[in-house]
Image (cartoon, rainbow, N blue to C red; front, side, top):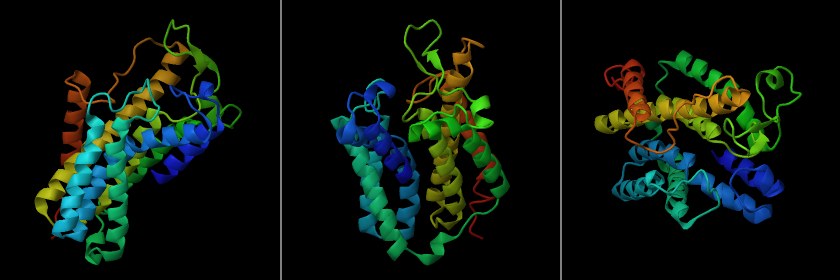
Length: 288
């Protein structure tokens, strides 16, 4: 996540706003503005899971209260209007989530220095599934990693043939707004990739959480984070690699924000399956 913030800062600093998506600034202020918005979204969602692990590892009343406060600050990302994909300039509403992320980062550093050593226990069961899922996600994140760094995959062996990136395409079928199929800068497909990888990595630390209830809640959250991340990757890839090739006009539903919808119901159901298949309490969460 930290590397992602640095990449966003550099790319939005370097490139003009016209080559990016729904931002108005460029230069140092433009880069800082977009990095600020980035921190208030996927890092905030990831920080909620990190906080559960860190607070359990530090295990004292003061850090627990601070962790709960940071969690509430991070959770403001779910408030309607805080994250607007059509307005990606920094807003005051982004500040609470950014403060939550910074607090989570500080607590993580503190836990590394003062936390319980035995809490680093790994849950290695399922590593093959983690590696396969992570490897597939990394491959399909290639156009978004390139966009984050400010270049296209055109001309890159194999990847440039599989993925369309720099070719001008209408934003939606029939739209008069034409730009690169995968514009430079940050994409929610990359947010999906980062959340997917975070969920896979943090799931290895579930066995180190001493409190049974907190283990179960964290596992459930990581299950939803994994499904949410993969779904957002699929949504972005389908739009830019299938719909923009005019192969179909049907699109995978947008699931960026929580909603009472069939898509969200399907994600929750999938998360339940992931929980019981991979991270169920009596299997991988046992400290026995």
